Image 1 (spheres, rainbow, N blue to C red):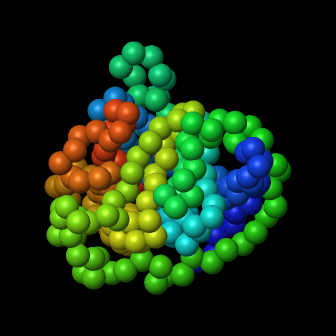
Image 2 (cartoon, helix red, strand yellow):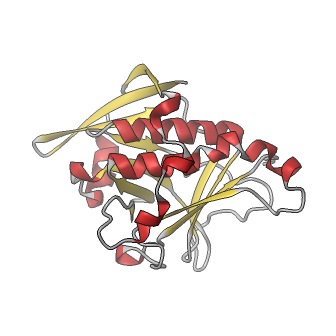
Image 3 (tube, rainbow, N blue to C red):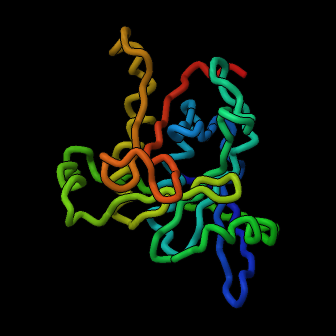
Length: 226
């Protein structure tokens, strides 16, 4: 699959930060934090872009992949992301490798300094993610396992941080949003919805560092009405 992007750059001290954005940005993709968990909603087009950009992030060790989606309206039947006490807060999404050691507290400054960017087309090969049957999920619960994702929030943005292995193994789950979700209402007519759950760290922790929820619930919204 080909994905159109814009590659932006900004200076942070003596370093250059490279940021990749989809062009155009996903319109049918919403991310919110409701104090208890992180929730994302995607239709078919939004799911395809999310999977493509996740694949790009797995291969882009020196770049931040930014999805500026916090202004997107939520689908019908989902409460809006206001930000008052107890209300969900809409967020952007950034995917990056932990090897970058990017200080998330500087994101607002970097975002404001990004240049206009240059257009580019990149390929996201179908074989970027392993088959689900090839992923040894039991390893995720072992103390010695290190390829977990980490979540952080800064400047109304969720940062998903991980190794190439972490992104690729979770990508095997995300791919179900494209491969299985569209037919799910017909194969499972009594089910409420199709979703994918991604965790940060071990599955037993309800919250990540600094109180960030350690669970990202991604729900497929086939009938997206605004």
